[in-house]
Length: 422
Image: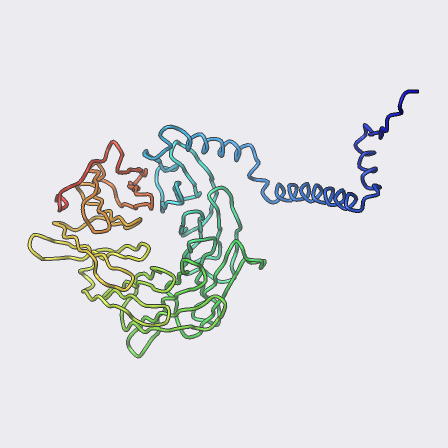
């Protein structure tokens, strides 16, 4: 008599197989089956919610843009050099955002990549549009009015219509930014907004002051501290006062009176120190309220300034020997580290990634952190301004287009002279 095989029937239907697993004698097997089912449904719900929130990313135009960006980035030249023409033939403001350019025109904001790629085109009806950018985000607002919009390089994150007119704004290094408004009952209101905020109006922190007019306010690199450059009437004089805050509190952490000077700009050099440029002096000030350095000059001698991580540079008139201008680099303590003498005043300067860019009528000249010659692009003499990028390249801005140049560009060459040609 043939031996009877011990066979367990296995249903062909997936529904019956799941039913058998749910009714299995093993408690561990039943729990594992329920967990697998729960994870599967959770994944489905997550995909649906992600698609609903980011539906614009999956539109045909967005998918085409993403494809063009990827193919351009993977191409042999990968868009390192080239020209971006402004869509309307002119632009009120142009600023880099990552590897792209944000171009603010009369009626729209364009996010453009080399290779004729338009990442975004946003219609704006601002009367006085202002543009602020960092590596990943774009803030646009209507100065003197109530509207603002916050974008990534691929999509609009949110828009707001404020209850008070916007006086000024700045963007941090992440997804947060600062808005200064003229709110009724106060001289100034400073509000920090962020894409990560859980509030309906996206605000993270707010300071209202009946005592000070706030000219500028900037976030520290970590986004946890804020420095406000304020001024106050003292008799017949206006005094500029720095106010430092921690964003986990609404009280002033430290206050520094800089005297009767006109503030131009304030910039965090690291999470503990700021540099302040005024009409008469440049200061470095710690977050604890200590003035660590002061460099004096006359208002007519200051030609320009630029900031980078841990350092800043000042361009001034000079009458030393054949020099007619000089650029000095200062560290975060305010100590002078290097000086470059120039035979003529620069048209524009930029400082980024440990490099100094000097634009003159003879072209662009780039120096290393010790202000020693590195490379030059003599064809850029007609540019209106220059902006270096952290990767060692530079944008040259003209009236109708912007040009990207690097040390390895065909237009560039080594620069070994110790002075800039007149």
